[in-house]
Amino acid sequence: MEPSKMSTMALFLLVVFGITVAKVEEENPEFWRSQAKKTLQTALNRTLNTNVAKNILFFLGDGMGITTYTAARILKGQLQNNTGEETVMTMDTFPHVGLAKTYSVDFQIADSAATATAYLCGVKTNLNTIGVSAAARNGICKSQKGNEVTSILKWAKDAGKSVGIVTTTRVQHATPATSYAHSASRKWYCDADMPASAKKDGCADIASQLLNNTDIDVIIGGGRKYMTPRGTKDPEYPRDYSSRGKRQDKRNLISEWLNQKTGKVAHYVWNKTDFDAVDPGTTDYLMALFEPGDLRYEAERDPNMDPSIIETTEKAIRILRKNPRGFFLLVEGGRIDQAHHDGRAYMALHEAVALDSAIAKGLELTNEEETLTIVMADHSHPFTFNGYPFRGQSILGKSPLWAKDMLPYTTLMYGNGPGHKTTNGTRPDIRNVNTKTKEYIQLSAVPTASATHSGEDVAVLARGPMAHLFHGVQEQNYIAHAMAYAACVGADQRHCRGQTTPALVHTTFNNNYNSAGGAQSSVALISGLLGATLLALNELI
Image 1 (cartoon, helix red, strand yellow):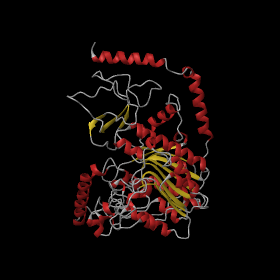
Image 2 (cartoon, rainbow, N blue to C red):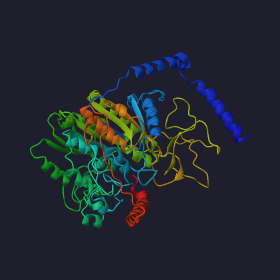
Image 3 (cartoon, helix red, strand yellow):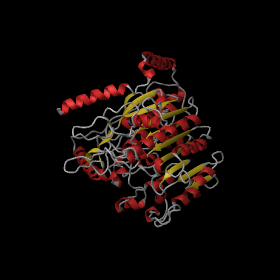
């Protein structure tokens, strides 16, 4: 039989067999009509919440594109012994949804640094730079001077609110760092990571800026080794040299942070026992660093040593919400992205499910009438969901419809990444391979050491005061401005005054590309782009 006819016959058999796995109630048209009517009525009954947001609860799924979101929904349902597709995630309950365009000023496909600067600072910028405008150049210290841009975390602090960051990565990583730091390179985690020229020109490493730029009330994540002098033994891994302190300036930033909080109730903890002992009701400041670098994946986390993102989110909210003026909290599920880079769908999806549970905890601890809650991704990955799997089939399983080479493939795959493996032009036979384990690396079409990002729009979900502002298809930098407007922080105070008319703004753009100065600007831009391109492969994490 010809391959095309075999494929058609196989698809026909799949459809016939698939009918037998449908739930009986779903075969009744009234099931779907009734469901739709209830959803419609809920939409018709909804009224807009136009309150001023006392609190902003911002959840960021790093790399959590639409495919990841969908696959995580199915996994969450299957972990509860359901078919999965019909599962309602906490994220799914958010009534207002939009899309954000993720490109950076210099690249079609951005990284977490450029995107974070957009949605936190309200300004699009260049690849690999954080908290600076696009006038700054990647890795060039001098170019960041005078081009710093502040984030909504700082705007909230300046407005008298308490502020915090919770992440599953190191607290110096791109997403959390952008809330407090300004750096021409996202990789300048501590002074040991900086070139001599940057130090000479007066740039500060990201870890030191954690103490100096904004008075952050709650700091939770990893990154101990960037805070202590070189050679300092790690309290959890004293024999592991890679976990030891890295700082060349001999500063102990943890001790300095504690000294800054004299007269306040401030706690530094590095393990779950001490973390659990922290009383939110009496605590003013908390720094919790549970690993030398990034935290462990949820699927590998030791619950006796490290709290979950659900627990860290709860602790942060309980500390911050004591402020009568409210709070801003950034919660990042940062290792979704890192698992995708490694081609490990199992890990990425379990991280996303954990983030959804943290979102549920956040909603439980706050009042929707006064708390604007946002969930979004910064960018996506070349992650695909394909192959006509049966309803209820494991999201981590294989398509029942094989390929033209008569070999099976997984329903989750990558466009590029470390999962590309061929022998004499033939891809691996995975018939006897368990693809549902945390160690399995998904197949990829193109061989790269690490899966790249992808450039499609990402979802933005909102509920609470002024959540309806998060609508349509917007530039990613719009997010910061909409959050700030809703909470009356930053420059735009119209919402506090009940105004909706545009503020008078006079803007002058210097666009002298026909002049000699314009030519120099063009050369600088080209040089910056070339520099960014050369560093991109090593810095897109």
